[in-house]
Length: 157
Image 1 (spheres, helix red, strand yellow):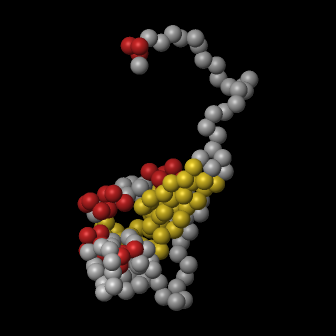
Image 2 (cartoon, one colour):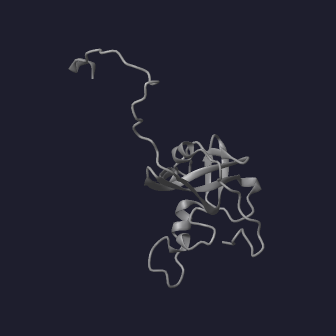
C-alpha cells in the first residue's frame, strides 16, 4: 500500500471547533471491524469525520478522528479492516503490526459505508482535545427553577 501523504503534502484538515458530543457519538471502531460501516459522521469544516476511540476525564476529553472521503475521490489504495490487519511483513511479531505502523494511521484506506455511500477513511488521524472542568453539579442559585414537593412511590420508578 502506498502512503497518501508525501514529504511536502499539505497539512490535514483540522477538527478544531468540532462538537465533542457529536464527535464521540460517531464512534465507529467496532462497526468498522465487524461490518465495514460507520455510525453517523460529524461534519466539520466541510468534511465528514468519525471517531475511532477516545477517553479522558471531565477536565480533559480526547477522541481520535478520521476523515471520510468518497471512494471516487480517494487517492490511495482501498482495503478492508480484515485485509489490512491480515498483512504480515517479515519481522512482524503480531497480527495487525502493519496496520498499527501505517504512517497515515491504522484505519487509513479502509473502505466503509454510511448512508448508502461508499467512503474511504483518510488519515492521518486527528486528535480532538477538549480541556476545562465540566460543571456536573451547578451551585444553588436564586435564579434556578424551583420544583414542587411531589411525592414519589416505588411504582413510579
